[in-house]
Length: 114
Length: 111
Image 1 (cartoon, each protein chain N blue to C red):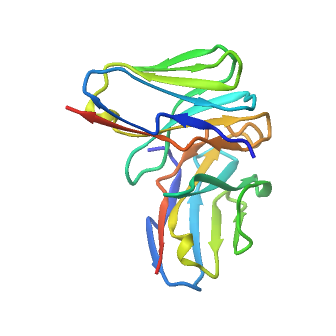
Image 2: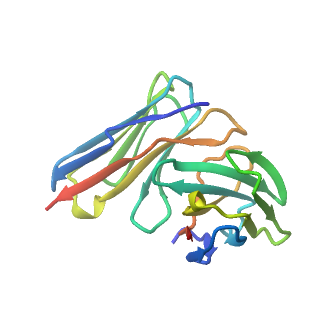
């Protein structure tokens, strides 16, 4: 158990819909990262928040957005969903905002868009 | 963008055998990490390396940070069935940069 929690574990929705994925970091960690893992793309970094502020952006689509709240939990919002958005979405956390190392991953949310 | 070339893509070995896998890049990294992912789970950090030439062990796992800083190696000795999973390398170019992940090595063990 990494100490990072993610909900829900599974999500099935239709194209065009909007969903919200939630992540709680390990106690004491200030940074939250979001990743997308699909069969053909591997593990892709989407976005990082550090202590409530966006710190780094990766391959995140404009239809996707995220935020980190004062209690440090984070939400990833995915809108206008397409079939290709079906993937595993992981949240990771770390103490530091700049080093990126020693990220601890949550169990993931499996999103299926039908 | 930066890419990590991880090899082999997959391995199917006999229980008890040693395993070697590696990651290479054309870029210089200042941090290398190795993760293991089991089906339905998130990646779990196995070993972190911070200095060129560093050799670090975690039980039967040993990883090395290449002296050129462009590669890293992971060895697993005396493999057992629970070693099955996907092993990812990840590197960070410098402070403040995102992690770049390799495509993974799928390890299967015959008992």
